[in-house]
Length: 163
Length: 172
Image (cartoon, rainbow over all chains, first blue to last red; front, side, top):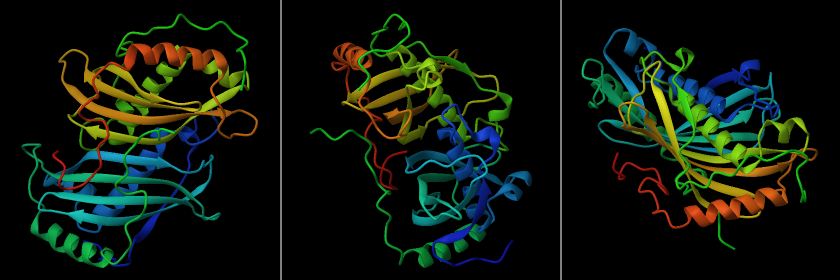
């Protein structure tokens, strides 16, 4: 397993907006923001050993139960992205966290993605407690992230305000 | 505000909820877990939002004619059940709220043959002026159609999965 990175928030994921991710409005399509965020989830899960190797070795999988995205500013083809990840909460089977996507050179916030992830047993495809090796690392990451303020995009209720 | 649109609008469907959009899970939407990846649920739902907008008169011609665009501001997805490659999808769409520039939509995705609920999506979509890429009121004929649809949808019950706030205490 890779060395644990206790920097808070986790700030390891980088990506570039691909041509295929652009829609007829000339910007990254809403679905591909989530493609980019889902790859940042892989980077986060790598920290506690539940990324590609975990599934390839038929140990387990992680499934997303729920997701909330705020689209804050457009990004265009070729734009460099920087995605940070903050753990908000966790229990024996689940992880609640939020990613923030920034334009890597201009610095502005492009989007946020709050997620609920669940550990899944490979054979049964049903929920299962985190393996000990994962939980031990999740506990350490969560402790390191606990001192961060909760981002204002977390816990949002979607709606149109009535005037 | 645009007073008119320079093309013929499709006949308005006011079924409550709307139940027209169909799609299929493509092979490139499937991930290493052997099911439709979370992002492609959002893409599939975005196509359902596109179908809603076409019904309002805001299809490709709206963008190609450099009149305007529609941008998603925020989205919330519940992933209720897995979908495999080739699975046929049926979408229903309910208009939850609207104002001068925005709509609040609620989609449900079902496995079209087996009938189970696969996912839900709440989304806020805003009208955008083409030139300035900033928010703008709906074109007048669209605002009129939204009101007609609203009359048909406002009496639908509020979906149980709408208005969720994420947290470990909420039931999954």
